[in-house]
Length: 109
Image (tube, rainbow, N blue to C red; front, top):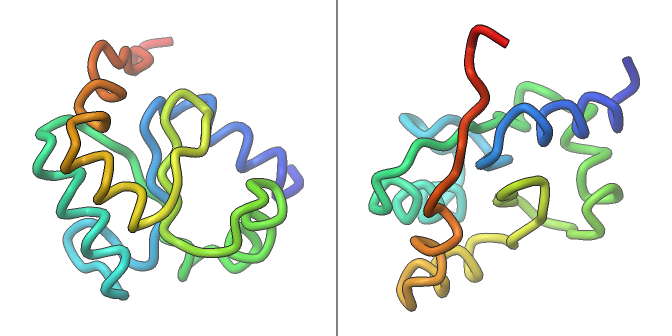
């Protein structure tokens, strides 16, 4: 499977997906740490991809998304933005609204 197809599959399978450096438990950059803090504060589940362990996605996602930096938050296959945007919409309540009524696919599908 080519890298763009893998990205599309990840976005289809995860209604809330954070492409980041590191993991939510161990972010490997300050921007990823700030994004994770906002997501955790919302109290809703989210998936993540550690781009440091996947150089192909790290190289291809900025082209696919037309967004050059990480982290990148995607909700319902739509790019929301990076760290500054995540913080802004978290603070003004928009992030909570976006995360409302998210339906995660059943593990049995």
